[in-house]
Length: 112
Length: 115
Image (cartoon, rainbow over all chains, first blue to last red; front, side, top):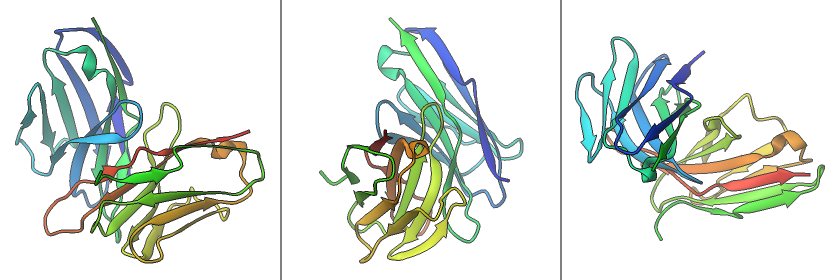
């Protein structure tokens, strides 16, 4: 059965710290891996990764995919209280039809 | 606002009642997904439409759940004879089926509480 596992489940850091969130997956027919940030309601899109070893960056956030070892990491440098959220990893693994398989998320809390 | 819109935002219902949620996707997005999310969990896939065709339905979806997308635009999710275990956030997402890779955009969700 396809699955996506995120770690840690939760994390508490202080402003200015750097955090690394992990996402590993076991799916058939991998197509892409996506990171979303969920604060109160809708998950908002952060990154899509399709190729190994190519880092995607957006400000203080960056992410990279390893298709050989089947994992991805999301890094956040110089964390701010506004980074507090649940970070969701999703894998697009079409098997006849398209759907995303989500991990349980990592709950990040950044203290002032 | 050109994002994914869901209505209502909150719904409280008594056990045994029927409820219907609506999702208006981003215009011209032909893929539409319904997910269910409970506290502390990631979204769980429920069903998927390509235009008006429902192409996949999760085993999680009992016979009490039905979804439609009659004209390939908005979609409705109906739950009949609601149970307390149906209490969750129901998320809708839409995506454009283009060549290459695209991401799904989520609506704000409908939070259902069954009492």
